[in-house]
Length: 388
Ligand code: COS
Picture 1 (tube, rainbow, N blue to C red):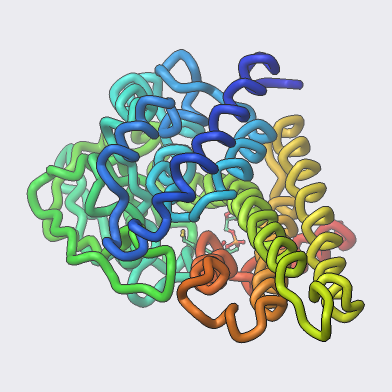
Picture 2: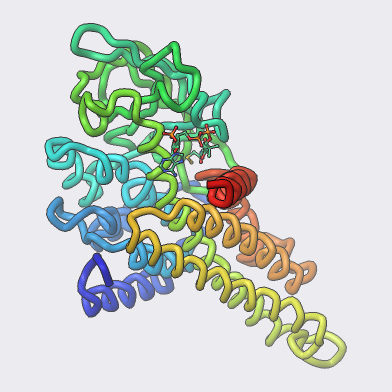
């Protein structure tokens, strides 16, 4: 393997996380759903296990997993509710990776140890009320004032904003350039005067995850807060895109973990539930549903692994990451639908876990780039490759 931790250490970590997901997290899922929050003891245990620092390089106190290792570990963790992953997800992925990929040595030194331990939650502030898919169109402004920049604007659906110690904020530093070219990425401590985090949003699923609006009013940061330093002025959009590429493989792995869980639940139900004098799993039409889940799950898992290997080898995997996110999350949607169908009327009832999982995984097709954005990235780049 090109990078990451030693394979024995890694296998032990996978076994520990597998046990933790099954013995500790799954039994707590209903409580999390009802209380719309993760119990503090579980947060502390996740910190203790080093889960916040999975992808932070070892020199900054993290575990330093490679992309293929991260994908496998996230798949394992996501056998349990996606809400638990969301707690560590911004530190492992989009909230911190901009600093890991493009930060200066001083920025890494300052922020990554806290990110790795979980003492600092890092949150990714890109999306705005009027700009979601059109990330290059963001309107939050960062205007130069002497040696500082002054940020104004509103960010929307920002995961972990209420828990954040630091935001990576994308703002327009060149008002004359409308698209991706005038955007810079800033590291903004959450206690900087002028930041207001709104009340968490109410959502369809993933109860216990926290997303909110974040309002920036005359938030002053030095130019040294630009990710990568002043030389990266106006280059923040590329940082966002690189972060999202890695994130899209991570989301594919999440979809695989949840798909395995849903298939297992549906299979257990098919073995147990009897109709027409035998377990429903002996009826061929139910077998068809199970087979389609299993085939798509195998394809999804193989795709995550192949794309993660490409990223590890080549340092980027733009088409592969989009194909992975697109296929795995759409497949998870179909698997959820079949798994619920196998349950019949029971599948619609809140007593059965499948009802909650069905709602939870719906978000996978939306965040970190909708399925339609993935199609657009895949098609545009496929056409460009042939035209070159
Ligand atoms: N890695 C590195 N650079 C990238 C890149 C990537 N994955 N994707 C784009 N870029 C670069 C391009 O190469 C281009 O630079 P050059 O002009 O030097 O060639 C620049 O960024 C602009 O790219 P592009 O022209 O493709 O930008 P567009 O505004 O047309 O569209 C999409 C980009 C739609 C693909 C982008 O806005 C996107 O991914 N949107 C979804 C955003 C998202 O995922 N939101 C979820 C928020 S987080 S939960």
